[in-house]
Amino acid sequence: MKISLIALSFALLLITPDVANGCSCSGAPTICGAYASADAVFIGSVQKVEQREPKKNDAPSENFVGQIAHVQVEKVFKGEDISEAVFHAGMSSCDPIYKEGQRWLFYAYYDKKSQAWKIHACDRSTLIENAPDDLLYLQALPASGQKIRLSGALKHYENDAMKGFSLVENLSGVRVKVSDGQKTYEIYTDGNGVYEIYGLPPGRYSIRPEIPPGLKKWFPSYYGEIDYSDREAPKAVLREKSCANVDFIYSAGSADTFISGKVFGADGRALPNVCLSLLPKGSAAARSRLFDCTDEQGRYEVREVPRGEYVIVINFDGKISSDAPFPKAYFPGVFDKERAGVLTISAGDRLEDVNIHIPSQEARNKLQGVLLYSDGRPVADELVGFKAETAPEGYSGEVHTTTDAQGRFSLNVLQGLKGRLYGFMYTYTGKYVNCPWSEELIRAEGTKVPQIETEPISLEITADAQGLKLIFPFPYCVKSKRE
Image (tube, rainbow, N blue to C red):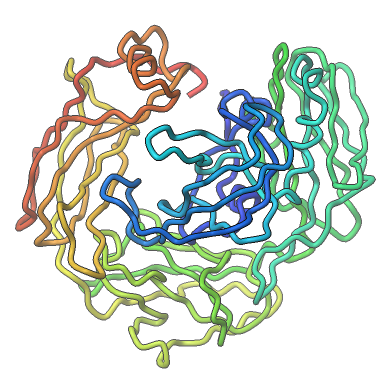
């Protein structure tokens, strides 16, 4: 089985600084892929940051304040020779939070409507100190773009009760073995912990770094076309003039230390899609790297917890929403911070059944139905959302879910909201095989990732509703094998 552009969502949080709590990513591009897609690629320093209020047509988010970042361009790798760039950000949970004085590597896209630049959520844009692998490729252009390249970074991270999951060091001088099963190549990481090799023949390659003394491999992150037929040892698939990046994160901490449990609503039912953070006792941190969101059974698990005393905060931003129909709450189930329970963690502790019972919540109604193509076939693994016309102050009027294999959806929405229910998906080059409507949309939008919506259904949420049908105005197409 092949899966393209897969990387751990937590790893993406590591390379994108100061993203908002709750952001998750399903993948990120390779270095050569990000370079090819971007309108411009350059190094720049943030000179000034202004706050801006969200506008009516901004990307959907009610929890984040927008920013206008003024950037002095230092070096251009792709695009026009510009000296200054203005970036709009902060309008979604995956946008960065810019700070004056930061130096960034930008894979930038120009928005003609706002006449400003932006970066894509979960892309490779990052602080310059996090980009040594990218810079090796970019500084070697154009020659680097004409060869097969395999690269990655080896880093030592540790969890700290106050600083969170933070970099300890880049692992330099570590031997890395790359093999296609017939021939093995040996390379070593440089002073920035980066290994790279050019000119490999097309094929499938395993990457095995030697484990530094005193450390344990915590997780790898794969970017590019990956062969997962052997789940224990995935292989990077390299084709002519392609590239792949495989990073490895190491830690001396114990992977066995965790806190787990369930979140229950006031009616005693488990609450899915509720996010919680683990904060050190007395911390005034605005967000935490120690967080999780509950699954369909209301279960959560926070791993790699450093020693210390903690409080669990549920619905950190305090917005009452369809997923979290209550204000900010604390373990074991109180709204008053002073009454929050304190959990003490020692090395190797496994705290199970740390359950949270929300004392009261807003009423919700369940919307159920099916998402279909115009030929009546179900739309699997795509999105259905509800967006309110307006929402009271302190409330969020948006919620979405993903359809199952039969195209069915089930969505809990706050009672009393009035808005529209709709299905939506994203299409891009290579998602489908021989699909005229997809190719036509991509050409018409002038972008590789246009969003497509069904005709919406207008609803006022006063009771449960079943049998709802949302239909895309085009027939079913076969997805490519890479999907």
